[in-house]
Image (cartoon, rainbow, N blue to C red; front, side, top):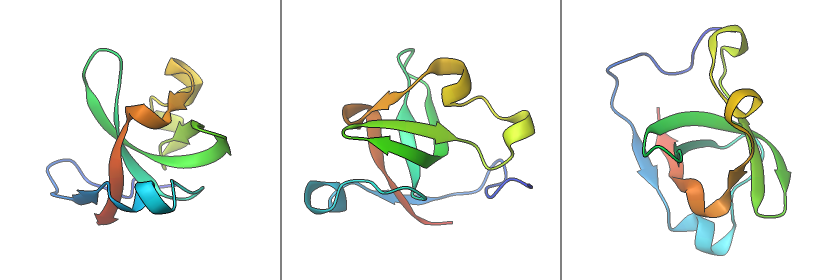
Length: 82
């Protein structure tokens, strides 16, 4: 599958809906990793406040298969504009 986002594109992300609805499977989210790097990945599984995230281009993506599960507090916001 081809990447949903191309390098250099701008996005809009919001974090207010998480207060009311949380994040859902299928949402594209901005995630802050332990090293401070920010990445954009799709939520593919949810276990309470812990998420498994994957890139849309799975063959060329660094995601939860490499760095593990992501906590709710590690998600900066949901991407609303691609």
